[in-house]
Image (tube, rainbow, N blue to C red; front, top):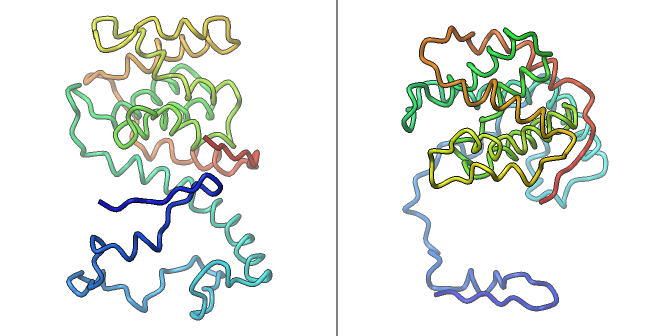
Length: 238
């Protein structure tokens, strides 16, 4: 077993020791190439690739960083909403773990219910993405969606997304693996009642096979409008 040397000063592993370990293969000829050697990824129109000679970020010049920062702002406007939608769309045909609708349809159904009740676009988009991370990040999927939308939504909706999974446990009192009263630790919080009602009305009920649900395309323009709002610039560090 490789032993890492964590010093009390740096708390960093000794990677030289790791790389010299016999457990790390030195001959990688057995690896099959992905076929993309010498083929840079495409860049959006009017953008430029970094010079081929750049092999590490620390080699970039201030001018190149300035260009990248400008590109990134435009890139996010064009791509952030698209890629969030694509993440959800990727689960369209995924199986359910037991409910009669899968997570994709649950998200669409939740957003449709909100739309039918006259919710604003921001809250509808929160409903659409509230369980986006449910499969890949099940234990913390509330934080997943809250972080995704943090810079474009209200404090109230951000808090609701972060805590909706815990509030949902209240409606699963028959599940002995959950604490149905865990949400009580937040009672008195300004957004407690809002979150409780949101979960009761839209989250726990969006499991119906007979509910007429709007397609993902119906919500696309709403998603783009939310993601192209001026970013709050908040960086969340856990």
